[in-house]
Amino acid sequence: MRFLRRNKIDKTILVLSDLHLGAGPHVDGKPNVLEDFHYDEELVDFLTYFSNGEFAQREVELIINGDLFDLLAVPFVPFFDDEYWSEEASLHKLKMITSAHPEVMEALNHFTSVKNKKIIYIIGNHDGECILDSLRSHIMNFFDEKNKKMFKIISPEDGEYTPHKGIVIKHGHEYEIANKFKPSESIIEDSEGKRYFLPPWGSYYVVRIINKFKEQRDHINAVRPIKRFLINGLIYDTLYTLRFLFANSFYFILVRFVVFLKQGHKLKEVMAHAISELELFRDYESMTEEYFEENPNTKLLIMGHTHNPLYKIYAGGETFLNTGTWTDMYYIGFDNKGQGTKLTFAHINTFKDNFESSLYSWRGKNDRPYADFF
Figure 1 (cartoon, rainbow, N blue to C red):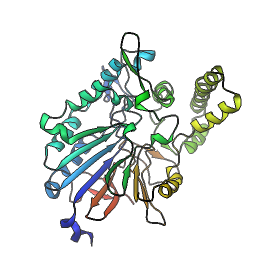
Figure 2: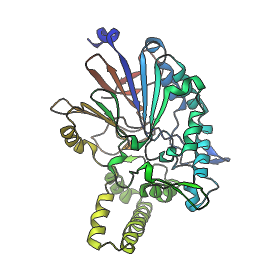
Figure 3: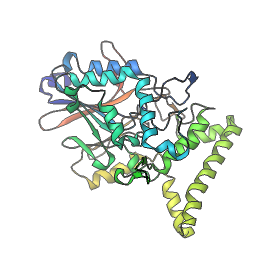
Figure 4: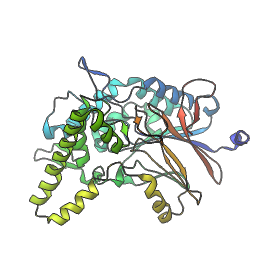
Protein backbone atom coordinates (compact mmCIF):
# COMPACT_ATOMS: atom_id res chain seq x y z
CA MET A 1 0.00 0.00 0.00
CA ARG A 2 2.47 2.56 -1.27
CA PHE A 3 0.04 5.50 -0.99
CA LEU A 4 0.23 5.22 2.83
CA ARG A 5 3.95 6.06 2.67
CA ARG A 6 3.59 9.39 0.83
CA ASN A 7 3.75 11.46 3.99
CA LYS A 8 7.02 9.74 4.96
CA ILE A 9 8.86 10.50 1.71
CA ASP A 10 12.02 12.53 2.32
CA LYS A 11 12.76 13.37 -1.31
CA THR A 12 11.71 12.49 -4.85
CA ILE A 13 14.49 11.94 -7.39
CA LEU A 14 13.70 12.11 -11.11
CA VAL A 15 16.18 11.00 -13.76
CA LEU A 16 15.94 11.81 -17.47
CA SER A 17 18.57 11.15 -20.10
CA ASP A 18 19.25 11.54 -23.80
CA LEU A 19 16.83 14.34 -24.62
CA HIS A 20 19.07 15.39 -27.53
CA LEU A 21 17.80 18.94 -28.00
CA GLY A 22 18.92 20.07 -31.45
CA ALA A 23 18.83 23.21 -33.55
CA GLY A 24 15.09 22.98 -34.27
CA PRO A 25 12.99 21.49 -37.11
CA HIS A 26 14.15 24.27 -39.45
CA VAL A 27 17.45 26.12 -39.68
CA ASP A 28 17.78 29.15 -41.96
CA GLY A 29 14.56 28.15 -43.69
CA LYS A 30 15.79 24.63 -44.45
CA PRO A 31 14.35 21.42 -42.92
CA ASN A 32 16.66 20.08 -40.24
CA VAL A 33 16.58 16.27 -40.36
CA LEU A 34 19.13 16.13 -37.54
CA GLU A 35 16.63 17.42 -34.97
CA ASP A 36 15.58 14.47 -32.81
CA PHE A 37 13.70 16.24 -30.01
CA HIS A 38 10.07 17.12 -30.72
CA TYR A 39 8.55 17.05 -27.24
CA ASP A 40 9.08 20.55 -25.85
CA GLU A 41 5.50 20.85 -24.64
CA GLU A 42 5.60 17.45 -22.94
CA LEU A 43 8.86 18.27 -21.18
CA VAL A 44 7.50 21.61 -19.97
CA ASP A 45 4.41 19.81 -18.64
CA PHE A 46 6.67 17.28 -16.92
CA LEU A 47 8.67 20.01 -15.16
CA THR A 48 5.50 21.85 -14.20
CA TYR A 49 3.81 18.76 -12.77
CA PHE A 50 6.74 17.82 -10.53
CA SER A 51 7.00 21.32 -9.09
CA ASN A 52 3.31 21.75 -8.23
CA GLY A 53 0.49 19.93 -6.44
CA GLU A 54 1.71 17.22 -4.07
CA PHE A 55 5.30 18.06 -5.10
CA ALA A 56 5.07 21.78 -4.39
CA GLN A 57 6.54 21.51 -0.88
CA ARG A 58 8.47 18.26 -1.30
CA GLU A 59 12.18 18.21 -2.07
CA VAL A 60 12.58 17.18 -5.71
CA GLU A 61 15.91 16.57 -7.40
CA LEU A 62 15.85 16.36 -11.19
CA ILE A 63 18.90 14.70 -12.73
CA ILE A 64 19.46 15.11 -16.46
CA ASN A 65 21.83 12.23 -17.08
CA GLY A 66 23.73 13.19 -20.22
CA ASP A 67 23.02 14.34 -23.78
CA LEU A 68 20.67 17.16 -22.88
CA PHE A 69 22.03 19.10 -25.87
CA ASP A 70 23.04 17.36 -29.09
CA LEU A 71 26.03 19.40 -30.17
CA LEU A 72 26.94 16.68 -32.67
CA ALA A 73 23.74 17.25 -34.64
CA VAL A 74 23.79 20.96 -35.50
CA PRO A 75 23.83 21.61 -39.28
CA PHE A 76 24.54 24.66 -41.41
CA VAL A 77 27.14 26.21 -39.10
CA PRO A 78 29.81 28.47 -40.67
CA PHE A 79 32.68 26.37 -39.32
CA PHE A 80 34.50 23.68 -41.27
CA ASP A 81 36.84 20.78 -40.59
CA ASP A 82 38.59 21.10 -37.24
CA GLU A 83 37.14 24.60 -36.70
CA TYR A 84 33.89 22.74 -35.97
CA TRP A 85 35.44 21.81 -32.62
CA SER A 86 36.65 25.28 -31.65
CA GLU A 87 35.16 26.90 -28.57
CA GLU A 88 33.71 29.59 -30.81
CA ALA A 89 31.94 27.00 -32.98
CA SER A 90 30.75 25.01 -29.96
CA LEU A 91 29.21 28.11 -28.40
CA HIS A 92 27.59 28.97 -31.72
CA LYS A 93 26.00 25.50 -31.87
CA LEU A 94 24.78 25.69 -28.28
CA LYS A 95 23.18 29.09 -28.92
CA MET A 96 21.35 27.65 -31.92
CA ILE A 97 19.99 24.84 -29.73
CA THR A 98 18.85 26.99 -26.83
CA SER A 99 17.27 29.47 -29.27
CA ALA A 100 15.31 26.61 -30.84
CA HIS A 101 13.92 25.45 -27.46
CA PRO A 102 13.22 28.61 -25.43
CA GLU A 103 10.23 27.11 -23.58
CA VAL A 104 12.37 24.26 -22.27
CA MET A 105 15.09 26.59 -21.03
CA GLU A 106 12.53 28.81 -19.31
CA ALA A 107 10.84 25.76 -17.74
CA LEU A 108 14.19 24.59 -16.33
CA ASN A 109 14.70 28.02 -14.80
CA HIS A 110 11.19 28.06 -13.37
CA PHE A 111 11.65 24.58 -11.87
CA THR A 112 14.68 25.78 -9.88
CA SER A 113 12.73 28.83 -8.67
CA VAL A 114 10.28 26.63 -6.75
CA LYS A 115 11.12 25.86 -3.14
CA ASN A 116 13.15 22.67 -2.57
CA LYS A 117 13.71 22.00 -6.28
CA LYS A 118 17.12 21.54 -7.88
CA ILE A 119 18.60 20.23 -11.13
CA ILE A 120 21.77 18.22 -11.66
CA TYR A 121 23.00 18.16 -15.26
CA ILE A 122 25.53 15.42 -16.03
CA ILE A 123 27.47 15.96 -19.26
CA GLY A 124 27.34 13.04 -21.72
CA ASN A 125 29.14 12.37 -25.01
CA HIS A 126 26.82 14.30 -27.37
CA ASP A 127 27.19 17.42 -25.21
CA GLY A 128 30.83 16.88 -24.23
CA GLU A 129 31.76 20.37 -25.41
CA CYS A 130 29.83 21.74 -22.43
CA ILE A 131 33.00 21.24 -20.40
CA LEU A 132 34.16 24.50 -22.02
CA ASP A 133 33.74 27.51 -19.74
CA SER A 134 31.90 29.72 -22.25
CA LEU A 135 29.29 27.02 -22.87
CA ARG A 136 28.74 26.52 -19.15
CA SER A 137 28.31 30.26 -18.72
CA HIS A 138 25.78 30.39 -21.55
CA ILE A 139 23.72 27.66 -19.89
CA MET A 140 23.91 29.29 -16.47
CA ASN A 141 22.73 32.61 -17.93
CA PHE A 142 19.28 31.08 -18.49
CA PHE A 143 18.82 30.89 -14.74
CA ASP A 144 17.88 33.84 -12.56
CA GLU A 145 20.65 34.81 -10.17
CA LYS A 146 18.74 33.45 -7.17
CA ASN A 147 18.19 30.11 -8.96
CA LYS A 148 21.75 29.43 -10.13
CA LYS A 149 22.72 27.70 -6.90
CA MET A 150 19.95 25.16 -7.60
CA PHE A 151 21.43 24.14 -10.97
CA LYS A 152 24.70 22.22 -11.05
CA ILE A 153 26.71 20.94 -14.02
CA ILE A 154 28.71 17.75 -13.44
CA SER A 155 31.62 16.83 -15.70
CA PRO A 156 32.48 13.21 -16.60
CA GLU A 157 35.71 13.66 -14.67
CA ASP A 158 33.77 14.37 -11.48
CA GLY A 159 33.03 10.64 -11.26
CA GLU A 160 29.82 8.86 -10.39
CA TYR A 161 26.97 10.92 -8.98
CA THR A 162 25.28 9.63 -5.84
CA PRO A 163 22.06 11.51 -4.91
CA HIS A 164 21.24 9.10 -2.09
CA LYS A 165 22.98 6.29 -0.25
CA GLY A 166 23.02 3.18 -2.44
CA ILE A 167 22.17 4.99 -5.70
CA VAL A 168 24.77 5.61 -8.45
CA ILE A 169 24.06 7.55 -11.65
CA LYS A 170 26.29 7.78 -14.73
CA HIS A 171 25.56 8.41 -18.40
CA GLY A 172 27.15 5.19 -19.72
CA HIS A 173 29.43 6.37 -22.53
CA GLU A 174 32.34 5.92 -20.12
CA TYR A 175 32.33 2.19 -20.90
CA GLU A 176 32.97 2.67 -24.63
CA ILE A 177 36.45 3.54 -25.84
CA ALA A 178 34.96 5.24 -28.89
CA ASN A 179 32.94 7.69 -26.77
CA LYS A 180 34.71 8.19 -23.45
CA PHE A 181 36.90 11.22 -22.86
CA LYS A 182 38.78 12.90 -20.04
CA PRO A 183 37.89 16.59 -19.76
CA SER A 184 41.38 17.45 -18.46
CA GLU A 185 42.83 16.04 -21.70
CA SER A 186 40.09 17.23 -24.05
CA ILE A 187 40.73 20.96 -24.20
CA ILE A 188 43.71 22.20 -26.21
CA GLU A 189 44.94 25.63 -27.26
CA ASP A 190 46.70 26.75 -30.43
CA SER A 191 49.58 29.18 -30.60
CA GLU A 192 47.16 32.11 -30.49
CA GLY A 193 45.42 30.88 -27.35
CA LYS A 194 42.31 29.72 -29.22
CA ARG A 195 40.66 26.82 -27.39
CA TYR A 196 39.40 23.60 -28.98
CA PHE A 197 37.48 20.58 -27.75
CA LEU A 198 39.32 17.36 -28.60
CA PRO A 199 36.49 14.84 -29.10
CA PRO A 200 36.66 11.04 -28.93
CA TRP A 201 36.65 9.39 -32.34
CA GLY A 202 33.05 8.32 -31.83
CA SER A 203 32.01 11.98 -32.03
CA TYR A 204 33.85 12.38 -35.33
CA TYR A 205 32.01 9.27 -36.53
CA VAL A 206 28.60 10.77 -35.69
CA VAL A 207 29.39 14.05 -37.44
CA ARG A 208 31.02 12.63 -40.55
CA ILE A 209 29.11 9.39 -41.11
CA ILE A 210 25.82 9.19 -39.19
CA ASN A 211 24.75 12.78 -39.93
CA LYS A 212 25.45 12.39 -43.65
CA PHE A 213 23.40 9.22 -43.98
CA LYS A 214 20.64 10.62 -41.78
CA GLU A 215 19.96 13.24 -44.45
CA GLN A 216 18.67 10.38 -46.62
CA ARG A 217 17.06 8.16 -43.94
CA ASP A 218 16.21 10.02 -40.75
CA HIS A 219 15.76 6.74 -38.85
CA ILE A 220 19.42 5.72 -39.25
CA ASN A 221 20.28 6.27 -35.56
CA ALA A 222 16.88 5.34 -34.13
CA VAL A 223 16.56 1.62 -34.87
CA ARG A 224 17.45 -1.08 -32.34
CA PRO A 225 18.92 -3.62 -32.21
CA ILE A 226 21.57 -2.48 -34.70
CA LYS A 227 22.25 -6.00 -35.98
CA ARG A 228 18.61 -6.53 -36.94
CA PHE A 229 18.51 -3.07 -38.51
CA LEU A 230 21.41 -4.03 -40.77
CA ILE A 231 19.91 -7.41 -41.66
CA ASN A 232 16.53 -5.87 -42.53
CA GLY A 233 18.25 -3.03 -44.34
CA LEU A 234 20.17 -5.43 -46.57
CA ILE A 235 16.88 -7.13 -47.48
CA TYR A 236 14.57 -4.13 -47.94
CA ASP A 237 16.93 -1.19 -48.59
CA THR A 238 19.94 -2.96 -50.05
CA LEU A 239 21.83 -0.21 -51.88
CA TYR A 240 21.55 2.33 -49.06
CA THR A 241 22.57 -0.22 -46.42
CA LEU A 242 25.56 -1.39 -48.47
CA ARG A 243 26.71 2.21 -48.88
CA PHE A 244 26.29 2.72 -45.13
CA LEU A 245 28.31 -0.41 -44.31
CA PHE A 246 31.05 0.54 -46.77
CA ALA A 247 31.29 4.07 -45.36
CA ASN A 248 31.51 2.70 -41.81
CA SER A 249 34.21 0.18 -42.74
CA PHE A 250 36.24 2.65 -44.77
CA TYR A 251 36.07 5.30 -42.06
CA PHE A 252 37.04 2.87 -39.29
CA ILE A 253 39.96 1.43 -41.27
CA LEU A 254 41.18 4.86 -42.29
CA VAL A 255 40.86 6.51 -38.89
CA ARG A 256 41.88 3.64 -36.59
CA PHE A 257 44.03 1.13 -38.51
CA VAL A 258 46.00 3.49 -40.73
CA VAL A 259 46.61 6.04 -38.00
CA PHE A 260 47.74 3.44 -35.46
CA LEU A 261 50.01 1.68 -37.95
CA LYS A 262 51.61 4.99 -38.89
CA GLN A 263 52.27 5.61 -35.21
CA GLY A 264 54.44 2.48 -35.16
CA HIS A 265 52.07 0.07 -33.40
CA LYS A 266 52.23 -3.61 -34.32
CA LEU A 267 49.36 -5.11 -36.31
CA LYS A 268 48.42 -7.43 -33.41
CA GLU A 269 48.14 -4.46 -31.05
CA VAL A 270 46.10 -2.52 -33.58
CA MET A 271 43.71 -5.44 -34.06
CA ALA A 272 43.15 -5.88 -30.32
CA HIS A 273 42.55 -2.16 -29.86
CA ALA A 274 40.18 -2.01 -32.83
CA ILE A 275 38.03 -4.85 -31.49
CA SER A 276 37.65 -3.09 -28.15
CA GLU A 277 36.69 0.15 -29.89
CA LEU A 278 33.94 -1.56 -31.88
CA GLU A 279 31.93 -2.19 -28.70
CA LEU A 280 29.41 0.52 -29.44
CA PHE A 281 26.12 0.36 -27.52
CA ARG A 282 27.34 -2.38 -25.20
CA ASP A 283 24.92 -4.68 -23.47
CA TYR A 284 24.99 -2.91 -20.11
CA GLU A 285 22.72 -5.53 -18.60
CA SER A 286 25.49 -8.12 -18.94
CA MET A 287 28.12 -5.97 -17.24
CA THR A 288 26.12 -4.71 -14.27
CA GLU A 289 26.47 -7.94 -12.31
CA GLU A 290 30.21 -7.36 -12.23
CA TYR A 291 29.65 -3.75 -11.21
CA PHE A 292 27.46 -4.75 -8.27
CA GLU A 293 30.02 -7.37 -7.20
CA GLU A 294 32.75 -4.73 -7.16
CA ASN A 295 30.50 -2.13 -5.50
CA PRO A 296 28.44 -3.99 -2.87
CA ASN A 297 27.12 -0.74 -1.35
CA THR A 298 25.40 0.19 -4.61
CA LYS A 299 21.83 -1.06 -4.74
CA LEU A 300 20.58 0.94 -7.74
CA LEU A 301 22.62 1.75 -10.84
CA ILE A 302 21.07 4.18 -13.33
CA MET A 303 22.44 4.87 -16.81
CA GLY A 304 21.29 6.12 -20.20
CA HIS A 305 23.24 6.41 -23.47
CA THR A 306 21.88 3.31 -25.27
CA HIS A 307 18.34 4.76 -25.59
CA ASN A 308 16.97 1.38 -24.56
CA PRO A 309 14.76 1.67 -21.43
CA LEU A 310 15.28 -1.18 -19.00
CA TYR A 311 14.40 -2.09 -15.43
CA LYS A 312 16.09 -5.25 -14.15
CA ILE A 313 16.24 -6.65 -10.63
CA TYR A 314 19.03 -9.12 -9.88
CA ALA A 315 18.87 -12.10 -7.53
CA GLY A 316 20.61 -10.18 -4.76
CA GLY A 317 18.05 -7.37 -4.91
CA GLU A 318 20.28 -4.95 -6.85
CA THR A 319 18.53 -2.99 -9.60
CA PHE A 320 19.80 -1.76 -12.96
CA LEU A 321 17.74 0.98 -14.62
CA ASN A 322 18.25 2.55 -18.03
CA THR A 323 16.15 5.67 -18.49
CA GLY A 324 15.92 5.39 -22.28
CA THR A 325 15.37 8.55 -24.34
CA TRP A 326 12.78 11.17 -25.27
CA THR A 327 13.51 10.81 -28.99
CA ASP A 328 11.62 8.59 -31.44
CA MET A 329 12.91 5.00 -31.49
CA TYR A 330 12.01 1.92 -33.53
CA TYR A 331 12.55 -1.59 -32.21
CA ILE A 332 12.78 -4.67 -34.41
CA GLY A 333 11.77 -7.93 -32.71
CA PHE A 334 9.39 -9.37 -30.15
CA ASP A 335 11.52 -8.68 -27.06
CA ASN A 336 10.92 -4.91 -27.05
CA LYS A 337 7.95 -2.81 -26.07
CA GLY A 338 6.80 -1.50 -29.43
CA GLN A 339 7.89 1.51 -31.37
CA GLY A 340 7.94 5.26 -31.09
CA THR A 341 8.65 7.51 -28.17
CA LYS A 342 8.13 6.31 -24.60
CA LEU A 343 9.25 9.49 -22.75
CA THR A 344 10.69 7.31 -20.01
CA PHE A 345 12.18 8.47 -16.72
CA ALA A 346 13.28 7.08 -13.38
CA HIS A 347 11.15 7.95 -10.36
CA ILE A 348 12.67 7.37 -6.93
CA ASN A 349 11.20 8.12 -3.51
CA THR A 350 13.71 8.17 -0.68
CA PHE A 351 12.91 7.45 2.95
CA LYS A 352 14.97 7.66 6.10
CA ASP A 353 16.75 4.36 5.64
CA ASN A 354 15.88 3.19 2.12
CA PHE A 355 14.26 4.08 -1.19
CA GLU A 356 11.92 2.70 -3.85
CA SER A 357 12.49 3.07 -7.59
CA SER A 358 10.36 2.81 -10.72
CA LEU A 359 10.71 3.29 -14.45
CA TYR A 360 7.79 5.37 -15.72
CA SER A 361 6.59 6.62 -19.09
CA TRP A 362 5.33 10.22 -19.13
CA ARG A 363 1.81 10.49 -20.54
CA GLY A 364 1.08 14.18 -20.11
CA LYS A 365 -1.47 16.07 -18.10
CA ASN A 366 -4.34 13.87 -16.92
CA ASP A 367 -5.53 12.26 -13.70
CA ARG A 368 -2.41 10.12 -13.56
CA PRO A 369 0.20 11.62 -15.86
CA TYR A 370 2.59 8.69 -15.77
CA ALA A 371 2.31 4.93 -15.87
CA ASP A 372 4.46 1.90 -15.21
CA PHE A 373 6.71 1.19 -18.17
CA PHE A 374 5.97 -2.52 -17.88
